[in-house]
Amino acid sequence: MLSDGYLLAAPGQKVTGCSTLTGGQPEFKQTEEGLLVRLDSEHHDPLDTIIVLELEGRAADVPVMTGM
Image 1 (cartoon, rainbow, N blue to C red):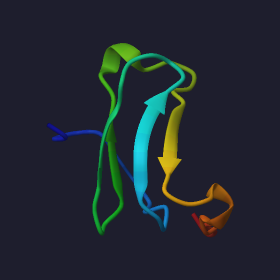
Image 2: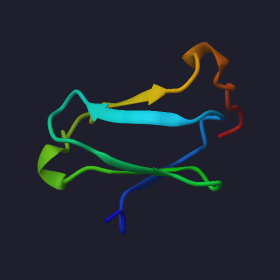
Image 3: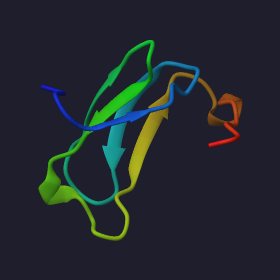
Image 4: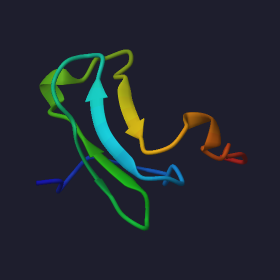
């Protein structure tokens, strides 16, 4: 269940998988509003939690966001 987590901007292409470099297996759900990613708190790193997204296309084709 993805009742909480982080809503990320839509990457502009289909996300086919999601993993982490800090342990655990994140859950994700892609919607028109963006990408919701959830990872159990026991796998959060206090300095940085790195989530890896696998995309249907090339990462170089993801639009660059500005003004955030």
